[in-house]
Image 1 (cartoon, rainbow, N blue to C red):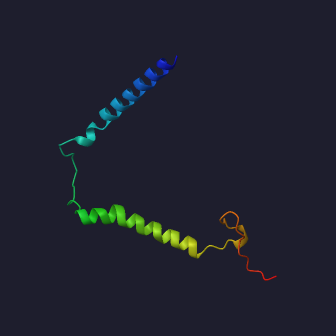
Image 2 (cartoon, helix red, strand yellow):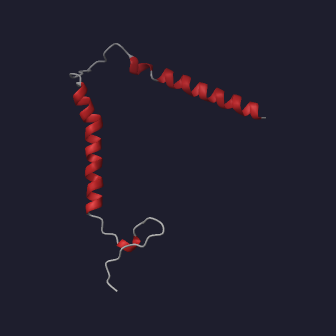
Image 3 (cartoon, helix red, strand yellow):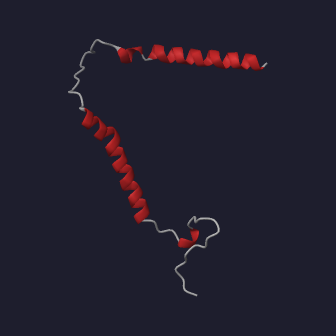
Length: 91
């Protein structure tokens, strides 16, 4: 029974891959469509800035805002096991 399931899974994977390859053929077209007006390409620096640096900067800004604006109580924060949380109250 195990061989049947493996064969079925393999056939499903192969069929899915084949369908995906057939559906992507328009993306590989060499002829331009009507109304197609592509702009100039991006340089390597522009591409890295747009797809690497900008998302990292956005992540850093959001993480920084979350850390700065954190209003949770010290006693509720997750700490290292076997340590006591520092509370602001004096005994």
